[in-house]
Length: 353
Ligand code: IPM
Ligand code: MN
Image (cartoon, rainbow, N blue to C red):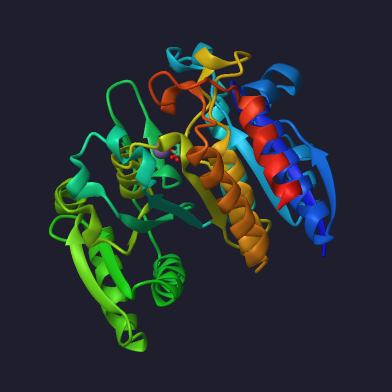
């Protein structure tokens, strides 16, 4: 196949992990006889510094040109503690989501056996946990009507039936391909928007009789994820709840640096690590490139190139088994590898496979 990929390295460790994601993608394309073409584009603080806009029109056009976007990270501390800043890197991310219609954010929460000991949870609780959080990404409080006054401020958590229904259907299609268990997470005991979610879910659930649907309040879901993460198979929820729950999900695995994600919807899909831009590590060649590399696996799988995705996953597992690891997951006394060295090892493994 011919693949056109927009590469958006962004800020902090973004460019370093991006390079590894690109090299692995190229190696896979060479191996399987796909033609790949890359175009690089600016986003985040880098784009603000260079052209004054965190998601410039040029970048948008590059995304539209592409079949898929390989995104890294945005964010820079110089904006974090400055409430007066007029533009922020994060706005670039939100603009990208909205303009590309990326309403479905797919965040797998997977444990890696050899890293379970790094989980804040006891091994027996978390071992084997494997679920996917489907987060609605273009609605809710993030994009609802806002007022930002000096004495009063609000964000509106608005959802339409259409928005709720389309994300539920994405969630059902994932549940069907997995263990056929969907948990709809809401706050229907308090919020009107949540009651609409629950109503729509109850209406369409009978269309998926092979899937067991259950309903859970978000506070309870946050608790259940800690007490019994293996309960979940697919969970679906609105934007803000999903933001919070997926951070919780990523950290219970003990391997946040390994978790990729996909955002899909109306236009070009985007593949990116779950972790952020980690500005303190910028330029030090210490960031773990595996979440970015596994995002490339999700990219291939999105196009039904399952063998390609599987080979990336196999190479990543082999690197972990061989203790070819960045400092934060290296075993005591093991040699320490840099971002580049881990990427090169994986490329090499793919070439020899
Ligand atoms: C995420 C991030 C973003 C979000 C921020 C950076 C705007 O936390 O992708 O989860 O809140 O959606
Ligand atoms: Mn978040």
